[in-house]
Length: 279
Image (spheres, rainbow, N blue to C red):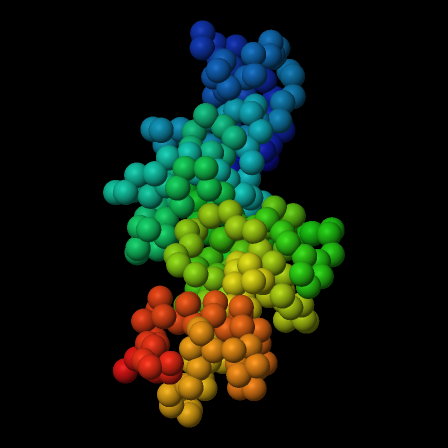
């Protein structure tokens, strides 16, 4: 049996050295430092489950610590450190951290994960061990919880797309959030509370906007569409509920909130009791 870097293998203790143990497979020897032995006393002939990795000098080494992922098994890893010139370092459960290179991170550093975020990554070994953001096809998690619309679930951003965010729960739910359903920038690995909005054969859709905010945006779009289509509106925040209801199917409170939102966005102005579109 050949050794496989990035995997846990059953190896036999061959002998003890001054600073550790030599482990063997049928063909190869691997060094296990005392610090990586979980302080166990090992004897020649003992079988151990050892994770094989490349140390800081590129040498194959063994540890009895449990790695959170392997070459064949992607996983969520916590961000431990951020180096703008290199990328982010991830805690993989052993003494060596795993690099997610800047080449595999967004160009905009504001979208990079920060310490404490979680990213779902695959492990690759090509002369060194590196992390890569897992593709949708790489996700091996199988959720047991069945979601339904209006459910809320904690997820992490695992991909930032052109029209939205792909999020993943720790259990394995894959959720798409369209750009219209969130505000501002969201980091890779950022934790989000997602409200499920729609479920179909194609997947699960969600929102990062509270329901009252969703209603606010909907009302604002109705008013904006009316202004674009018909021009000046003979209503403002001082209009009566009856007058507002004749034009829009919304309460005065909702109407005022929507006007306030559009005004802050500098899309409308108020002149002589009328609401005008800012051009």
